[in-house]
Image (cartoon, rainbow, N blue to C red; front, side):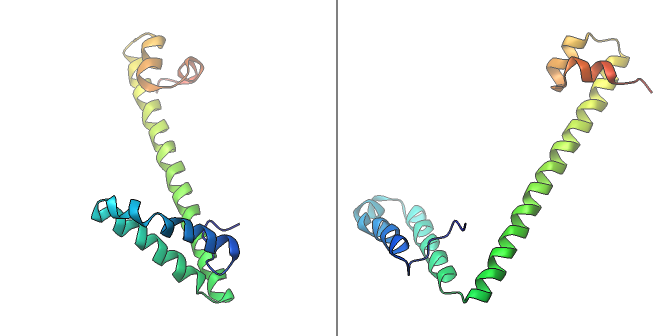
Length: 118
């Protein structure tokens, strides 16, 4: 299911109308915030005007983009974990207590015990 509003459906029209109904509130917003609201409305109408084929391509490109974000976040987390393991290895080699290493690396005591000294 798409996150975007189709203004050509009853539900989509009602949701956009709800935004427009609060124009007084929009006028009280700072210019940058108002600009962001109308930019979002413009994006919604642009997407709604796509043909079925274009919409499928658009949805697929959004899916690929989101997949890339998730993959990147996972890689960053994995890199952090590897860095913490390297730090824990050095701390363990220096003879620091396990509870101290747990506190500063975020690793579990079991993970620290499993780390071999190279």
